[in-house]
Figure (tube, helix red, strand yellow):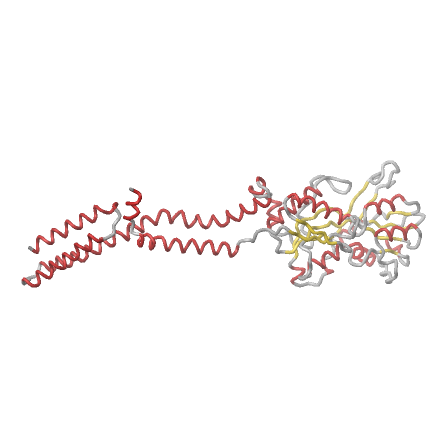
Length: 438
């Protein structure tokens, strides 16, 4: 009953007018927030990987299994290799969201919005360039391959792009487009073993690890040792080198028998610039799980790493490498953490409006109530000033009638009980003026 009485005493009109500006500010704050708020992260991604059986495809399959644990479906697109992946990412109509791209291929895509819209989520691993050749003894430089039948790797592969670059730097004319020039994978291995070609460039973006092992153990097949490593690094800024000791490939057969130096660009996880921040974090975390363990070619924890090469490290990736995942993503499943983050982003501006509003609305409401009382005071004071002037009976009667109207309007005021004392004081003052009119 008390609650009903209190509700009846509320001046809802005054309350609505008091709340309206703050409600409008709240709606505007939430609207602006939603305008710039990232949508919920998609649950489907497409990666451009490599040929079937390649190391790129194997890595993509590991990503696929890990992302599935977090409710994200990863679709793997087969490709010819790094260059093919890069073209898909730079093409606005391309189907890929992310892809494995080796260093040194940025110029393979024409300058424009497509290439400028690509960002790196970090370098993932070294991709050594294996140069196998047939011969009785070692060759000092790649210039010795002039005039030989060389398999460069398939069109669209990073292997082919890097092979052409290093051969050109050594003054070796690009081989003509004959059947063996574009060989890769198992066909390339067989061609080299059977003597149909004399040299082959092999990288993991277009070949499987077992194909590399087959050539390492094949009699009569040698692996080129880079003796001009420093010169290559200075000429090709995206190239690194790997120093391997005797027995690195096979302890039992002591392969290689002497220290070996290989050229090795890094492979980056390249994405379109519009990749959702939550997915960016999840992909880097996945990369850590896949590539973070040490191996023959890199140390534990060396990758993934925010190495700035040809593609700028995305802002979201840079933040993740610096401070890691947000608290919600550490404690909650991916889908729930994404929801919590979005709710928090909306709540923060809402609270910035609500907190001061909850303090100011009672004051605004009280001001409106007192203003209505003060308006009657203004009428009463004007009427009292009239009583100080000479009045005839008709004028005095008119003032009495006006005074009664003021008194009645005060009685009819819908005033909360908290302001009743002010109403009764006003009525006492009305009685004082009434007495002067008698």
